[in-house]
Image 1 (spheres, rainbow, N blue to C red):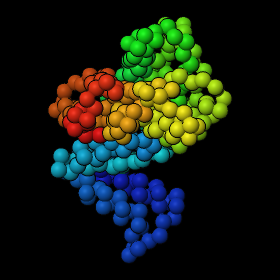
Image 2 (image 1 turned 30 degrees about the vertical axis):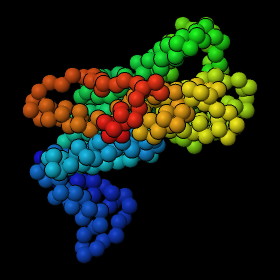
Image 3 (image 1 turned 135 degrees about the vertical axis):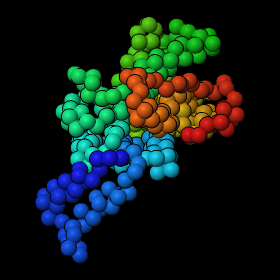
Image 4 (image 1 turned 90 degrees about the horizontal axis):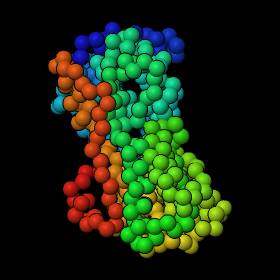
Length: 341
Ligand code: AHR
């Protein structure tokens, strides 16, 4: 809002001297771009948002939530960076936001570790950092203002408890069960929490055997490959724990291509996380058994935090979003009507 010009000009010059940008009408193209941004950002709260990527339906919904919230109509000027699932891109983006002297940085970190240096730079520059969705693990907690997101460990535990109840309801409690897990991006909070939470319930069930964990990187394509490998390697699989919906879609494709069935009436129980619209459709088709909700609509919550900080109020360091789960025993069509993602 107030500091934008000097940083933008500095960045423009830095980029110009490093890359030798071409001139047009006596001015560098880079300089004109940042001056344009500086003009556009004048009078607004300037926010730099560094998103993980666009690997899943959940991520698309998350981006939409931030884009729809951080609008000029709402008093914001948004600088958006898609890191394409790479931490190195996120480090560059945060440094670029610091050089541009934005008022706030919003960071959805790909992985939890490796943030101490860049967050110290943001703190030294006096820019509050709000972490959203996935967490950062840093030695000095004062390097970020607060975090808002999902309780991933709780999601994992709830998935395990759901499976216990599901089996008990069908008289299958204590039955020998072979499971596989398709993990999310290794080192991300969503992967760490869901794996940990589910394994807490796994440990309490002696008859459950986890055959293998492999990462499908939260994408449908990689998950399909992982599930194909599981089906080739293990003769009997009773449960596929997919750490997001898109990986469940990939697993379902592999299961069906292998001539097997899944879902409530099939051979393999499919447990998923996120509960996006396409997962509801897959539950209605009888392909997914349950989707543990992960709420991507975090833009308004982050905006509320910024408004409170602007008013000089204290904000809570850790803020969880409310979440539930959905399975095929529910009236999914009616539930879907009231949902935005
Ligand atoms: O961090 C949230 C996870 O990241 C979502 O479960 C997944 O779909 C996304 O890619």
